[in-house]
Length: 163
Image 1 (cartoon, rainbow, N blue to C red):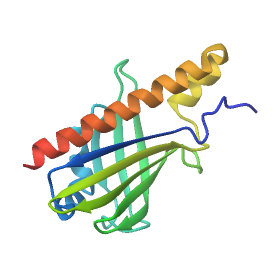
Image 2: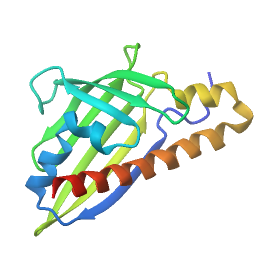
Image 3: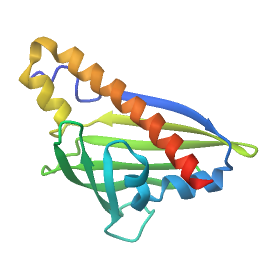
């Protein structure tokens, strides 16, 4: 079945912040505060011991049209002060998304690279593309652009709140 390029669709942002890498690590792993910072995420809550591979957290998103999702996230990368990533699961056994931060210290600053990669599972992006295949590229690319902008806004809000 053609998924019009949804599986594997990716967006990445790079932001340099005036915080040392240890502070950035504490900030990006504070998933219980994501609801304060993100334009879409309304909560995050650890379900297991935090910040280790195999740990899980619950999260919820609210979109401008009022649609809400509640998901479980599984930590897939937890390399202190270097890499933090998780896969996102809805009702399926395959993830529909993977999120990852990679940190690069530069003195008292840190370069943050955050990436989103769409998985094989079901999602709003996939449904939008399959419901309107004539405009699949528009839907997919529009959502990736929106996700990239939201990543930048989230990182800016994190840094603002962290100071």
